[in-house]
Amino acid sequence: MCDRLTGLPLPSDCCIFTVLERLRRSNKAAYTPCAVAIGPYHRQLKSLEPMEDHKLLDRIFGKPWILKDVYRDMTLLKTRSRFLSSRGCSKRHLVKKIGGGVAGEARGLTEVKHIIDALRLSFLPSMNPTPHRGNEPIKFSPRATELVATRSKCLFNIKFEDGELKISCLVLHDWIESLFRNIIAFEQCYYKNASNRNLISYMVFMDHLVDTPADTELLMDKGIVENWLSNKEAPTNLINAFCRETSMLRYEYYFHSLSNELVELCQRPYNKWKATLKRDYYSNPWVIISVIATVALLLLTVVQVVCSVLSLACPSFLNGKLLL
Image (cartoon, rainbow, N blue to C red; front, top):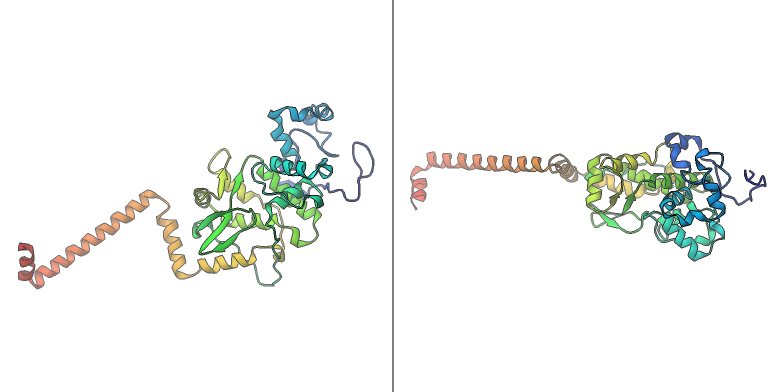
């Protein structure tokens, strides 16, 4: 492959890929720059031509109002930047800035091949999970409304401890879909080893955890999801869109054991009853009031029946008690 600007061959360790067509179909805008072309692709787009002169004179970073779009464009799979030649402290600064509030602590930056790889590493725990090697079918996570969830730190470090699902905060802003989609595309294009295809497992887990707006609202109440988007319905739609047109093999799913544990827990009769009660009766305050009123009316009816029976069975005893 050659650089479209210079016509020279790209180095063998170059990590610029063309996004798979099946991924592009679901959201082409997520893989297309909106402000500036960085690298050999997209230079032919008329909408990006005004930024070419600004690039050559490093004027871009002097314009705060456009930096957000530039940072977003730097995370595209088809981008080539000077990230690899930057110093470690500059790389960490870029990861924080470009991560847009979702990147964690950057690590292992001397080995990364692309800014997307650096962002990907910032989401992972210090010890990478081992991929599942069994042959049993995948059982995906139950819905959030069937579980008790609390907030943890690392994006990928999801655990079930002390009866609670501990999961990190996911910040949903207006270009998070582009960021995650390009990381997933990078994993599928660059890494041949399934042990490095991590983000797709996370997004599959979240896709099954969030099924309805009620699931999203629960996660937002717990501080697990932060909604920086335009409306209340957007987070649910976005989380369910991350994995569209992506593929994952059975042995690539890193939350296999965790999902099995959660499914078994939710299938226990008592937990199923409690989850149904919570979902169908406790989700609306008016329903709760109605249930309380119904229970109170039932208790009053029982008391009235008992009093009637006692008055017929032993009227003198009942009259004596009433006189007292």
